[in-house]
Structures are given as C-alpha cells and as structure tokens.
Amino acid sequence: MPLNLASIRQAPKAVLHDHLDGGLRPATVLELAAQCGYDQLPAQDAAALGNWFRDAADSGSLERYLETFAHTTAVMQTADGLRRVARECALDLAEDGVVYAEVRFAPEQHLQRGLSLDEVVEHTLAGFREGEQLAADAGTPIRVVCLLTAMRHAARSLEIAELTVRWRDRGVGGFDIAGAEAGYPPSRHLDAFEYLRANCAHFTIHAGEAFGLPSIHEAVAFCGCERLGHGVRITDDITDSESGPVLGLVANYVRDQRIPLELCPSSNVQTGAVPSLEKHPFDLLARLRFRVTVNTDNRLMSDTSMSREMLKLVDTFGYGWSDLERFTINAMKSAFIPFPERLRIIDELIKPGYAVLLG
Ligand SMILES: [Zn+2]
Image (cartoon, rainbow, N blue to C red; front, top):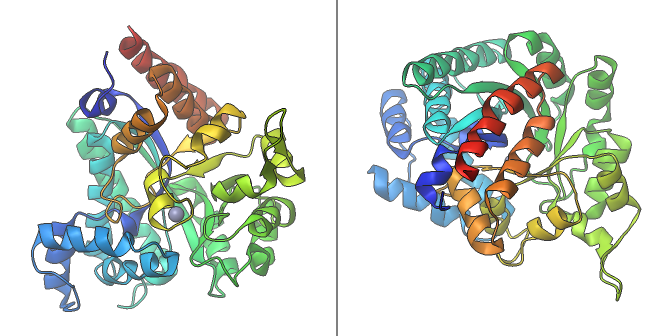
C-alpha cells in the first residue's frame, strides 16, 4: 500500500501528547464564543480564525504560541463548552484513525465561570465518553484517556496531582506540567511529583522544548517522570565524533531507562525548538534507538493531525509502514493504562492493522 495521507489515515495510530485546548475546531470556537459572550476573537469566520491560529503559532516563540490558548480556554469555561470540545476531540481523532489517545488539559484554566476543579474534570470526561460512543457507532472506535496538567508558572501543582489521583479510575490516566519552561524548572513542583510517586500515579513532564538539558535532567533525575513531553533538547547531550554520536550521562539515562520522548514534529518547528523539519532530531533519535513517539501537540495551532505528522516524517526521512508501526507500538508501550490493556491494543488493533497495510 503506498504511503499517502489517505492510506496513513487508515493505519491504527496512538497519540500520547495532544492538548484539549489546542485541538478545537475553529467553527466550534466561534459558536461557543457567541454562546458565552466572549468577544475577543481575532477573526469572525472559521477559515480566517483557523489561519490566525496557525500564523500566531508560526511566530517561532513559545511564549507567543502559548498566547493563542487565551482564546480557546476562554470558550471552555462552562459544562457545555467543555463537554462539546471533549466530544469533538474524541471524534476528530477517531476519524483520523487514532485508536488510542491521551488528551491533556489544565483544569485550573477553566474556573473563570464558577466551575470547581472536580466539575471541570467531570464534564470533560463526560464529553470524551460521548465522543467514544459516537465514534464507535460510526465504526471508528477509539479509547481516550485524560491527563491533567498543572501550569508550571502557577502554584497549584499539588492540588492538580491530588485531583489526578482522585479521578484516576474514572478516566484520568496521569499528570503533566506545561507552560513556559524558562524560569520555571520542574523541581519547583517536587511536592506534586512526590505525592504522585507515593500514590503510584503516572506522570509526564514538558521538558527540553524551549529550554535545554537542565530541564530534562531535573525532570528525569529529580522528579522521576516516566515520559518526557518533547524532550527534543536531549540532543544537547549528544555530540558528534568520528566514530558516530556520543551520548552524555543524561541522554544515556533516558535511553537506558527507555523513557519515551513525546515528539511533536510540527509543533517543535513552530515553537523554534528545532529550526526545520529537515533538521528535526526525530530520525537521529530513532536511529539511536531512543523510544520515540509521534504526536500532534496542538492540532488547531499546527493545522495538523496524527496522519499529517506521520506523513511529514515519511516525506522528510523516508519512513515506511514498518517504521510507522514501530513508532505506534512505542507509544502504546508507553501508555498510562494497565499493561494488559496496552498489549491488547497492540495485539488486536495495531499489529493486524499494519499487517494489512504491509501486505
Ligand atoms: Zn505540549
């Protein structure tokens, strides 16, 4: 089967790093803004608004990129808004052939109209369940697990860690910290990570995107994260030599421990973490046998999908179906669900799906 957008959409895919507030449909942003009286949107029709998000995100600065979220989170402050956005997220991922998704968002950013943290989680999970049901009815079943994010510049991470543990058997799979990296090292939130570890809860940390190796070092060595959100700057600890790449202490540790890298090719270029897709270290890291995974990050801001991210990698690095299968199995091995459930998805959905495409 030739590799193109249509055929990749048929392949079973898994995404570990996708932001709920970064994946809204432009038309939904407009409709929800009208419903809740939010009048700050920079454009008034769906196509223009979609372009505005992409252009703002293309600016090359993580801070500017993060500004776009003021508009999406503004329309996700009510039960109906959260539910609809979560439902459509599940449907859009499923329609793209994603069979397993971990979707994250920061409940603390959805309290402006009086919802409590628990209510925010409750309505979002209800939306995911509705989306899963509709997707199953449409013949594109998907499982969606929610990750709760704490903002790294704020001081609510312990509270969000507690929220994660409180909801973990009801649709929440783990915890994350996100937001501007510089000046806000992960070790600021050590109490949250200690609480999670004491409760045997899963967590990932955005690290090594805008900021370099010290951020990754803290995330893995001080905080004990199971996965790295992006982690592209692990390349700061890999040097070239005549006999090939040489790994430093942190890079070796990340590879030895099989710590998954949640790489997001388009987003990494947009935020300036890497200069271009051609210079993205995805392929270097894959060849060095790091546990690389392919992710979307923010489908709205990057105007992308899992299939498009995979196609970009195929076009840039010449990957074939067996590579895409390997990246997908890497993601499932790293999922924040119980081991037998990961295996079931690998054995019953992913391997048979790629077997058909491999011919
Ligand atoms: Zn992210």
